[in-house]
Image (cartoon, rainbow, N blue to C red):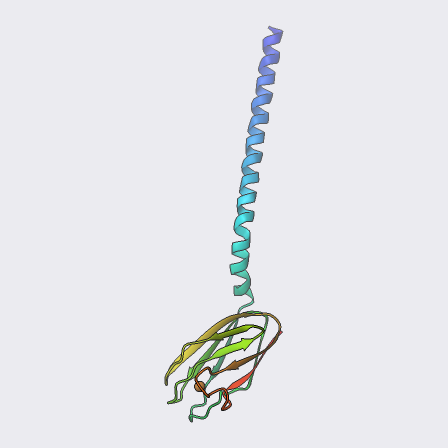
Length: 144
Ligand SMILES: [Cu+2]
């Protein structure tokens, strides 16, 4: 009788330990799966958090220049939108530090957008349409 009681007690302990162990395993796998998904959510969240939106426009009179020669933004994901009120087609592009990204070339009344992820430094924004940057359609983008 005594033995049976002891065995039953051992069985209860074993079940309790097993239950505890399996719940620990579950929480461990939950942790590891959330850790696995963490870099993805972090990388998608970080640019959003640090995202800067800059706007400029092309000269409406048809001169080869923007309405500004200097822009500044925080490091991270930066979106530059250029509106084009000019009869000449233009685009917005950013280059520097091995990056050279161009937005689409657009006509009057449209906007050209370029999105880049930049570290602190000095970059150039320019119009990539042939001859435009050389004619003065460019400026400095300072990233801090
Ligand atoms: Cu242009």
